[in-house]
Image (cartoon, rainbow, N blue to C red; front, side, top):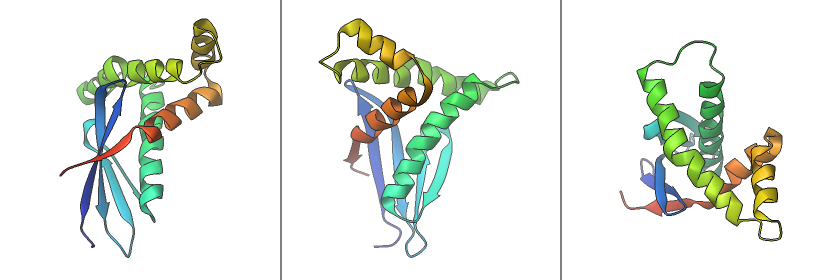
Length: 134
């Protein structure tokens, strides 16, 4: 049904991190919004819209960390959300996902950065997707 709104709660390590509001705008596609981070994106399919929302969550964090200019109040709040909720929950989640490796090996792999960090970040968010009532 066009115009239907789905709200997905993103939770990791027993903690609610943020929500994704997905609006069905077919035949055009789906819009996705992360209100806690002021992110809005669009996709031709529901999956594409969700994938883009997760990618924007990651890219926003990278942009905030690498900003060449001082962050405004809103941006500082976004960064605080990443530092106090999102990143700690992702670290905890990823430390539990590789049982064959020792704790320090898992931590080192997670903190090494590069594409492995991006992949772990996105996969953890995608597996945490839980639809909730509107």
